[in-house]
Length: 434
Image (tube, rainbow, N blue to C red; front, top):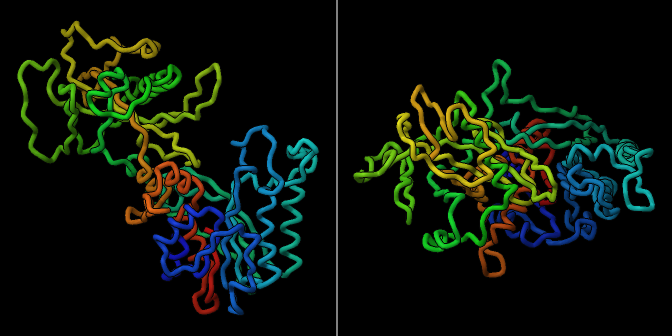
């Protein structure tokens, strides 16, 4: 996406072994020639048909370099995928080669007999990789860049390597966003969210969920409830400035069908005898979880005012709503919450929040997973990017959509890098592995 935005035309060739990834790329780039194949099996000379290649972009599988892999054995085959860039360099010598990977790619080295990276020879293969480019006449530089510095609302950081042999200097684009003077402010998590989507209560029973036709197979795990409690504590209860959802009002009195509405429309019918008020403010926060089987709960929440953490190939971001109703100080009934919430520290009683001098109490808590579209926005993709193409006669599943997002290159970074190093006259053909 970013390469096309920078060039003003389609990429010529895209290669990926995943047919679902190719289906999504074809839907958005119909003028590109696509190959569903192991990238090593594609013959650069044959597919380029004698045309000079100006830009080749490579994003080899990074999961066996990432620190998220932990101490598990790694795959030598997958760790060797980056050598395909050398194959293209030797056979057709693109004028500019760009390669994207996790920052740990710089530690690329030999494996021990147990298929774990050798700590003594860390980085040896990476240095050899660079030397091979230089032997072919390439100037090589690499740098870690964050997507948020170029307009995407995510802190995703990746290593980018640029090699060029056309005598032109390698250019690293200057950041456009950040806290420094003269830069645009960071885009945040709040910019990605569709605040009108419903968010069901975390305290619903199976029977209540069934009555509301919600696809909830089981109650939330205790650790998830504890993470939510910590998030409520940090970003709603014990903050002087909770994030109040913009242009959004929720109706919390209707037990069978919660309705949400923008604040610039007339209020719905207000019923009598609804304790605390029929309509409520909504304060929001996020919770992330990995499904790790640990005794201690690892909390990695964040506020909508923050940047979105790096998106992986699995959806692990959940939006948490605290539904707030006015608190007058003489309401002694309160709202009973499940045990995990009792660990939260409070100023007066559980769930008391002050917003602009007015006291509110938490009437309910809702949670929903972020949608694929919201995740793509966080990655920097525009709303018109097609993420649910037809594959094998069916719409691409949400699981596949999320996987593609986690494996994608933030288009804002690709655009910035290609714009800084691309010349349309001297670089007529482009190759990308999707």
